Structure formats: C-alpha cells, structure tokens
Length: 453
Image 1 (cartoon, helix red, strand yellow):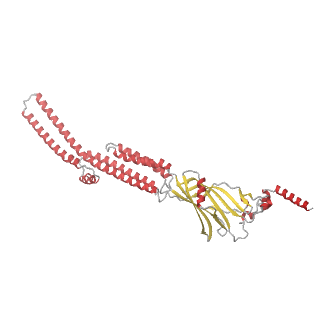
Image 2 (image 1 turned 30 degrees about the vertical axis):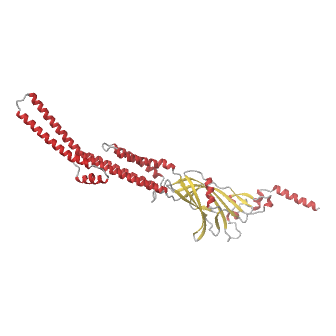
Image 3 (image 1 turned 135 degrees about the horizontal axis):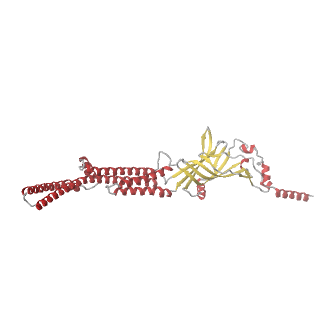
C-alpha cells in the first residue's frame, strides 16, 4: 500500500512537471492581470528602504553633430537592473524555470531620464527579463538628441566633452538610488568595440556617481562623460589646404609688375575665392565669443589681402600722377626713398642720385649745346643769304633735326623724373610684401602651436 502511494505521488509530480510553463509562472505572479499595484507602486515592503537601480551604458556612436545648434545625436545601449520584492518564485515548483519575459508596462519601472536630452527617437522596449529572485533586467537601445556645449577653438583638431546625466524624474534619492554597474575602464573598452566609425572617434568614457540637491531633496545621478575627437582629414582637404594655397597665390601676385591693371584684377579674384571659404566656415560654426583659431587665421589673411589691394590701388594712382606731377614731394622722398628704403635695406641712393643729379646736368649741358647750335645755325643762315637753294634747304633740315633732338632730350628728362615715382611705388610695394609675409608666418606658427597643444 505504501509503495502504491509513493508511485502515485511520483506520477503526479512527473505529470505536473511535464505540463508546467511560462504561463504558469506568470499566472502565479499575476503580472499579466494589469495590476495597478504592480504597475504604479514602488516594489518594496518597507517604504523606508530605497530601491537600488544598477545601470550600465555602452556608447555606440555619434550619428550627427550640429555645431550651429550645439546638439549631438547619439546611439546608446542602456541596461537597468532592480529588485521587485513581490515577484519571486521557487524554480523547483515550476519545472526549474528561473526566468521569464514580461511586458514592459506590466510592472513598476524606474523613471530614469537624461537631463541633456531634447528629443528621443528610440524604439519602445516590448519585454523585460524577470528572474526567480525578483530581479528585473531591462535593456534598451536609445537614439537621443542631447545638448553638448562645444569648444571649437581648436577646430578642426578639437576634442569635445559631452555629458549624459542619468537621473530620476519623480523619485528622489531617499526612494531610488542609481548605481553604475561597470567602471569607466570597462565601459570605455566595450564602447570602443561597438563604436561606429564616423566623423568622430571615441577617446574615453568617465563615470561620476553623485547626489544632487534639488527642490530641497537629494537626487541620485550617474554622469557618463564622453570624450570624443574629431577626424580632421575632411576639413584639411576641403578648407585648410585651399585657404593656404590662396594665401600663397596672393603672396605670389605681389611680384606681378605694377604697370597695367593685371595685378589688381588678379588680387580681387583671389579675395572673392577666399570669401567663399569664409562662408563655408561660417555655415557650421556657432556664434560664440570664442571663435576658432582657424577663423581668426582666415580673417587676418583676408584683412592682409584687402590691405594689399589698397596698396595696389595706391601704387596705380602714384604711377598715374607721375605724368601730371613729375616732381616727387620732398616729404615722400624723405620718409619713403630714404628712411623706409634704409629700413628695408633697399639700396636706391645710387640710382636716385644718377637720376636726379646726372639727368639734370646732362640735360642742361645738352640744352646749352643745342641752344648754341641753333644760334650758330641761325647766324650762318643770316650771314650767307646768297647761298644756293640747296644749301639753304640743308641748313633748314639741320635746324629741324636739332629741334627734334632737343624735344627728345626734354622727354627723356621727364621720364627720368617719373622714375622717382616708380622708386617710391617699388619701396612701398616691398614694404607691404614683407609685412604680409611676417603676419602670415606669425599667424601660421600660432595656429600650428594651438593645434599641437
């Protein structure tokens, strides 16, 4: 009789084990009954005991970075683990079932939000994992848009620090405490393994756990500080190299001869091309009080280009007034042909003396000789009035040739006087060229040092 009872008990146990399933566990717990107590009340038996929510985050990639609005679109993997004191069972009573999956809205969920979040495009989580000891595991992939104050001073070789502050929106620290599961080293390693390559590279992820005082209460926060670095190759090819080439071409244009208008038109074309680069740079940079060093470099180069254009216009004007006013004013000779030329180590004293003194002496001697020749010719014409017609014609031709020669000498004197304006223009042009080169070299060295730091 005893053996019969034992066999019946064993058969009942085997039959019960063969028919049990996930529904039996869910029915036993009541998680499918849409219970308002399970859904809305924090699952603790003593309200003075806080609920510990352990969380972990994996940073998977930067989908977009809007420098103008200073917002970042990221892809994150979030894992949250907490304990529900009212949902537990013995696995031996349910065919050794140790976990089941329950709908997300069927039990209480921590109200975790990201403080910097402005938009959430994440997909909803359908199910969560419930273990036999009451531990609930919730995984979710987030696609969020968050604010990120950008420091673009070293653009495009910049590094940015963006915070992702996880905290509770309703429950203060006395009710719910957030605790990070993994340390910063592990989160950084896992994030680098899953990080999608784009314009940005992940450098490091730091974790800070703290309590923040707000509304007279302490609120638990976990801050993931993400350090990312921009990949600059695209901007180097499309922005920096063209800007440097335009500067080199503009410097080379200073060696175009000053006569004519080729230099002025060429420099204006370069300035127009450089302005296009400035517009491209301005399209994605925010309006801040701390502009990028690349923008400062471009603005200084544009300023020097404008100054060189003004210099070309002024030189063209000096070459024009040389025909109207051949004599150079004394103060220009003093400050430009003597002092500025001495500072720039331009040796024009010998040429200037030969032009000013030699041309005047030569012209006076030739004028005196021409005057005496004309007088002698006129005297011979008046004395020898009985000469034949052929002789008179030859003498008249000789007088005309002498007058033509005199006119040529006077024209030469005027051209030599105009060459003083050419020397003034040459000295000023070389001064602007040297100033241009010095400023460009200084700003390039500063920019390289800033990017290297």
